[in-house]
Image (cartoon, rainbow, N blue to C red):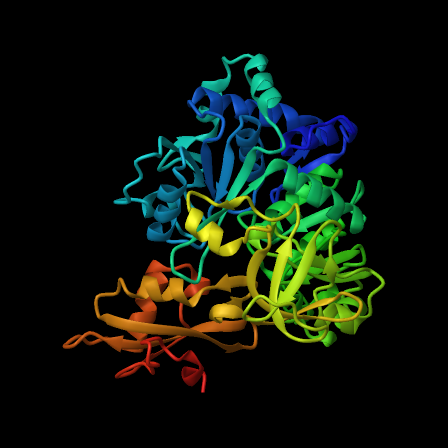
Length: 516
């Protein structure tokens, strides 16, 4: 494997040759893909992309729940030289349409039905000038079936794929993950093969992932946590990937017991749900490693994950889409208080700085905005040089927008989120984006969204709404409309109709007054 290039297909194909007969992926229905089958399956998919006219550097969107087909589609696209654009399965048509247009995606891989949602139908009426076609990973309505896509490429020679792989280098873009910004519309963070391969080879080694581990991936593949810190690191290190589409407590316990799950990362919400469930009635003794983060973590949760769920190694980490998903991580030797109250130290080669409002470094133990520099920092936002320049300075420091303190041992503790960002069950919620979506509701003249505490999800959105003159709407009607037009984690759980929003002299909403 030492001579494999630092690209995702090269590294995974090299691992496949090493771990040949071991199970690479086992679906929820029990179907298995052996490591020896990974390269042939990905190559067949790559031929499908080439036959469809996909060129090196093109973008391919994937809008589907965790499943074997998601991984094979992604590997095939990357082997053909394309970059993948994962879409959140909670998005509605308007939100997905924006990302497809902005990325210029040539093909969309999706499913005809998931949890009662027909994804292709959601795009009816969306203007998608660059999209050449829709391929269904699963299902039969709204696009070309997966097998038809593969059949169209079957006449191509292996040499066609070899040529794409030979041309693939570590500096080529492997993915564009769209992250919602505080200024409204989502922006696409561009990262390369080499960045991700190097980061996650080190990440997996630190966590001692390897052959014999069974990795239950509940974190969605459209997120760095499920994709990069999920199946990517797993397949590069000979781990068995167990995709899991929908979190249901008893179903998760059943898989842990039946498939001897050893690795179970996730946001705190997952572990809180497991601890509230019938964990004593299942054999979950195989659990070995858990990585959490993305929200505040109580010390008692860390302790109970160890004592009640029997997880040997429980760690917390911190990262952003713009940093390939990881910046800092705790170590196995850290005590429960350190793991709960900090996000650990920067991984090798990654630098962090804490600065005040004028960019001056703050003293140890003082709060400041967290800046990150290193090989994990994105190349920029897709086709948005102004946003890139605002995020990354001339010396390569990325402004995270997060406020943190750092202790004498180098541990970083995130204390606040700049610009009012809050986290709903592990997903970043951006008030400006939710407010922008609310503006499309005919009765709404103005809105302000804040995060309010929620026992299960940490925080949830609450909207203060000013109606247009002569218009009428109840809080229930606004919430109902939001459920039709927003991903569920963005939907305000509470709406308060107000006559006016508190403004400062510059005309900006004073959200601290709304928080009371």
